[in-house]
Image (cartoon, rainbow, N blue to C red; front, side, top):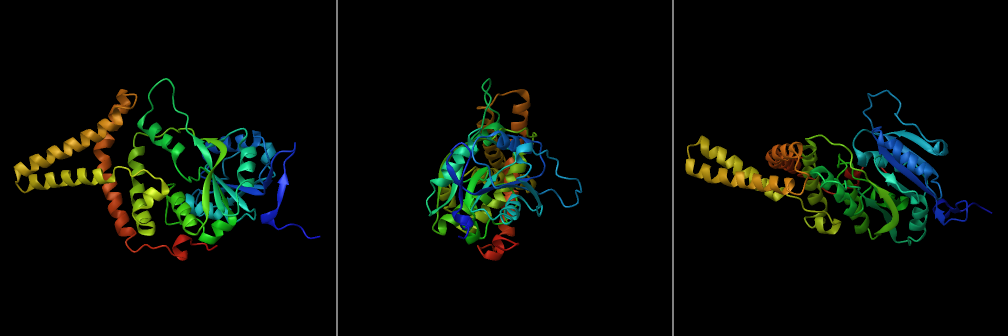
Length: 353
């Protein structure tokens, strides 16, 4: 009698737990210390083990050092390390899932902490997924301080708790990934590449749903200028517009952000400067007032809900001044870079199915 096909093979965990389809875990990583916490949580958790855990080492190719991670004993026979293309999370995840034969691939970020019953709940999530369900998302929680209001960065991170289809914890059928070509590697950052994949999978006729397993996403320390660095995502939003149309925000359940306001404030500031240079003082004064009002409003929106410490207020004031022109610059660069973008198999992946 022949062995069952991989996509039909299910196994029962010890102790009579829920029978689960075979699954692999793929974790793209740059070797951050938080990776050890992910692996420790998986090792200590209850429920059926994955068939394999693939760590995609996505550090630059000129870094010759071994991936800085200590694998817990219970996982040593399961962990495989593959070399990523150092082209961002989308390309790294493609490099990972294409190495595994299991019918389900669970993507985790290297800075999350799966709950103690994560594997047990995952087994239930995958077992109850019908044949038309391509993916099942985990439930993300972001712990915030209880003794003070959260900072701006903490509030931004807390938004992950309500985000749809984020690959911080997202399980996909391998067959669905193959059908749509995997992640679109034109997205170089950990932003929008997951929404893009989810929209393409749903456009192909599959459904996605939220599961029962729970994962924590701690707020990791970030420098004063983190809000400036995140503005690079405005270029990725241009690509989303090109590929999915301007209604993708609603279909992906993504917040619109403040780009229109940033463009208006930046235009007012630039016009005020031009008016001053050309001697149009009255127009320059009016435009300067508009620029100041817009900048002050943006700063207030970020400062008032927070802890209002001297350090936080200073950071919010300075970055609120700089964010609008930085956001506008990234948006313009996206318009140029993606002016001819369209959804094609060659654009979705450089490595093939």
